[in-house]
Image (cartoon, rainbow, N blue to C red; front, side, top):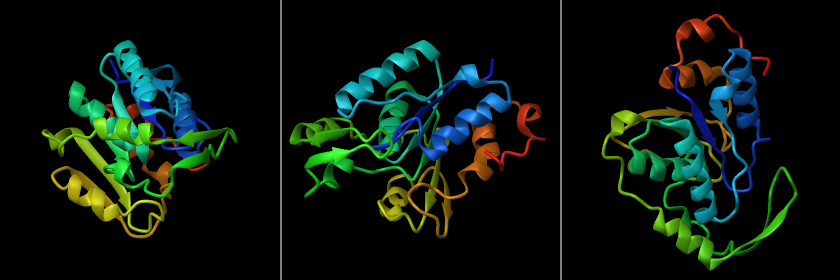
Amino acid sequence: MTSSILYIHGLNSSPASLKASQLQRAMARIGLAAQLRVPALPHHPRQAIAQLEALIAELGRPVLVGSSLGGYYATHLAERHGLPALLINPAVRPHLLFDGYLGPQQNYYSGETWELTADHLAALAELEVPPPRDPARYQVWLQTADETLDYRQAAAYYRGCALRIQAGGDHGFQGFVERLPMLFAFAGIPAQLWRDIDFSDL
């Protein structure tokens, strides 16, 4: 049975983000759309984790793919459940990064506004885990020109894992679509399903 994939978007992002959209179209192209979940997550970390826990229970043992804050969530869940995780420019200790950012926020895709509070940060802090106990379950993709997060923090935290550090790029992770075969290989999707497919037009 081919693994299911649970994609976890970042702060103020959504299933309509570029990476999420490209992954959804790619999974449809290889005939595995039913094995992908890309939930629209609540803003509050406790509600987001509850939703993700329910999806993990539904899917069994999915491969987690987390971007930015989603990478932080994915790490927490991967450690709790012993799941494999592919992280893209993941946030490390995000509760320490929001100093000065409390107050109104706006989702980049839906336009929805919401309030970032001290309770959000406390909930994020509750999710912090030590560096991965089994680094072989992880792959971490970083781009050095990430304008939102300092890639060196993730490189240090995940130093025991398979790190793919690429010069340049940005927080959204340029060239994601070219790396879909690497993602599929990591997820254990049989190569015959994707080996001969050009994903560059997604």
